[in-house]
Image (cartoon, rainbow, N blue to C red; front, side, top):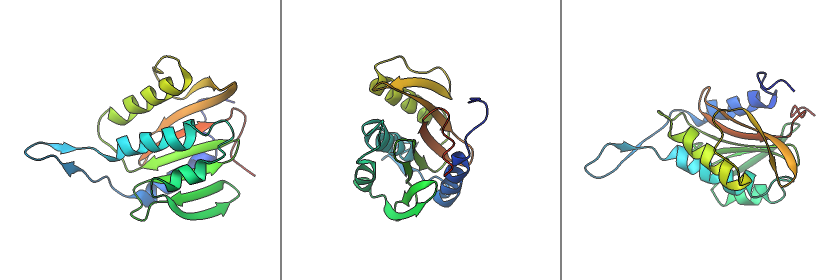
Length: 163
């Protein structure tokens, strides 16, 4: 698989991102805006994708603990969003797991995602994405796609996400 070509399933992730809309920011008392979606997205990625890999068994239930519901079954997997459409998931058992959030400014989302991948794999923080890493004896491609929002993705190499 050419890592420079993103799998077809990212098109669906991009659709989820479009549904998520623009990012909102919560203001800290007396301080500048604080970005919250990136942290929530990475926390969801850890619980939903990293902790349930490689089968992604239990990923839907983990996603529901973050308020993700309204599931749609499609050939691309199960797709769900929170009611406010700020957090989304796409899960294809044994193949891929994606968490989406609205666009975030700055490097925080990428840094948090890299740290999460390193914690789960016991390795170093990836210097760039996409990157192929073994998790629990299974190879995965990890990617952080920022086109139209934030998509935190892990995909089995050679899998396109197509039926």
